Length: 418
Image (cartoon, rainbow, N blue to C red; front, side, top):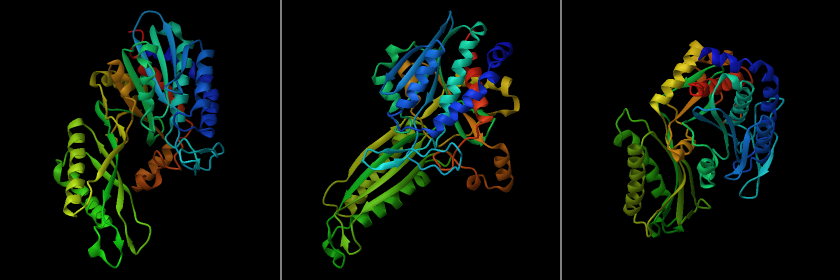
């Protein structure tokens, strides 16, 4: 195993500079979900140049590259490509200044605020190493580049477009994500890793009136306020203290002026849970509270509850993750860790689920190690370390890229050639 890893990874030094240039280019040119045309073309061109059999345009902009190398297992490695509507504030010389027209017709700033540029670069680096060292492994390596993870619809778009018929059925699916940990860090976790996420839009109805005559109204603002307060009791009073969950109300919209009681109010909220039973309980509790508070307020019309986005929980296969963790321990030594449960969410698990195969998803660090250590010493990690989706989030180029390429390569080689 160690000899095979060394044989494949020996080529990393020779491609490091090109990968760093690619990363800076991707960071400078971010694209929103299902609009990753430039990124997808760079990926397709690179894979074809490496001798992969390429299928592109899957689910809009998704790409797969297949490298068959004799009899053996099939490993699928996945990276997401899309960016976010965030204005970059990193001050980097390769910072994004891109703006794109959003769905509402307005111009939106765009940046790679979640590190998907790292993921694309790392997987292309791994793909390059695999094709350069074919004597060191046997099997089939599939590199999958997914669109629109941030919107939660990219994996399903590829599946709906015939992914399972257009790609070899893998024995295992592997994926990674850069996180606000020290660069060089790799972290695995068997079982629950990322939360399920459900976003809801709730509209409650009242009866409008003059602000001086509340007796003539059914006030939806008060109704919404009571609902918001009551929602906080779901986690604190309906779930066991050891059951992790988050219910966050992110926005409330009602009314047009201070002296007019409106007809309705809109509440938008987000739920994070880690298993199907808790997810079902929390969603049912939200519906119960909304309907009951509306009735208690004398609402003239039943509330409307719409689920606007849904991400599945990411639950790693335990045996698969054990194999990855052992490979990481052998290669990374003290930099290999067991990572904490994360409250972020992903749609990647829909891909292995569609194939009916196990998967493992892990984290790598992207924060300057000195900055992180100083913040940890002062107890100011939350304040001083930018997190994913922050306008200040930008993984340091190295050793983040070397770690990402090495982690994906070492994990794939834990199957290929065995």
